Every structure is written in structure tokens, then in C-alpha cells.
Image 1 (tube, rainbow, N blue to C red):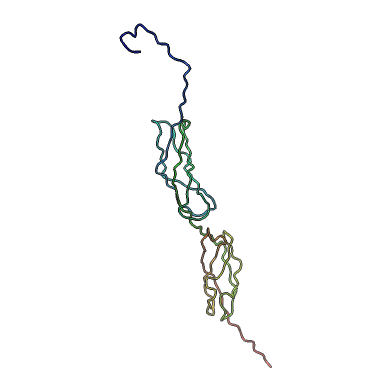
Image 2: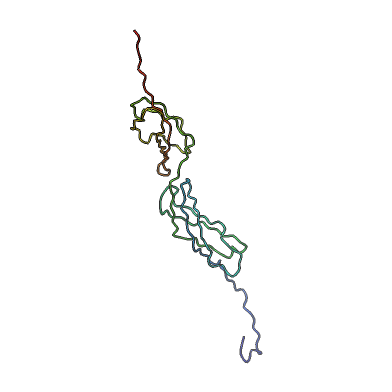
Length: 193
């Protein structure tokens, strides 16, 4: 109360009032989704994220700074959904709005050739396609073949280019390396009569 005659009165406070205190909204600024190499998952890394809207010195901060690509396979400008979480004593006082508009690329992975194939010998004048490649292994399924199978190499032993082509060519690069190929001269058969 206020006024010249407030001494003539007593105030009885109202009772039974109730109201809600809703969580304050936190936003995120500076978030950037990072490009990655294909790994078969939609996992995304987000960097640069900063919280906006924390009241005073309350204990609340970003915990997991992660996201999810909209697809797992290779592509450019793929949408990334924020999956950030909060931690701290006061997180119950807040709700987090995830960053939007994030995009990043998934590049092809490079398979590892764990065992290079061996090439069978070929006769002089034959193309590399006559040589059989065997025993090759890689980190993903695929096939080994001479890069230039029509090449007719000279007599002797020399390195020739081989290409490993993954079955999943959409998500993996080809790998090129050399194997040793020996070209031999067919010895004529001499008949003694």
C-alpha cells in the first residue's frame, strides 16, 4: 500500500495463486558441420558451436557436439541435423534449439590393398590380358585387372599397372599400383631325326 492514510489499513495478501516458470530457450551460433570420408555411417562432427542465452553465471554448457548426415553414402552439400546436448547443474532451466541449415560433404574412401595379386608369366607377343592375376586382397570387395590389358610388353620382367576396382564404386575410389610381369620367349622344339 501507499498513500497518506495507509496507517488506517492492513492488507491481507491473496492466497492460492500459482504460475509456471518455463525453461529458457538456448540457441547455438557458429556451428559448422565438417566434411568427412565415407565410413558407412551418418555420424557427423560439428565444430564452432557456442551457446547463446545462458542466464548469468548458471552452470550449463554444451556436452555432445554431434550431428547426423541425412544419408550415409557419398555426396555433396548433404543436410546435417544437429544432435547437440547440454550438461551442467542448471540444465533443467533450459531447452536447446538445435542449429539448422547445416550441410557438409561425404567424400569417397580409399580402400587398402592388403595383398597385391601376382601375375602369371606370358609368352612374347601376347598382351597383358593373357596374364592371370591371382591372390589379391583388399579391405573391401572388388576386382583386380590390368589397367591397360591390351599392352604387349617386351621380353623380360617389368612392372605393369594394375587397377583395383571396388564393387561399391559409388563410395570407394579405385586404387592403382604395379605388379611384376615376366614375358618369356617360347623356345622352339628341335626334332632330331
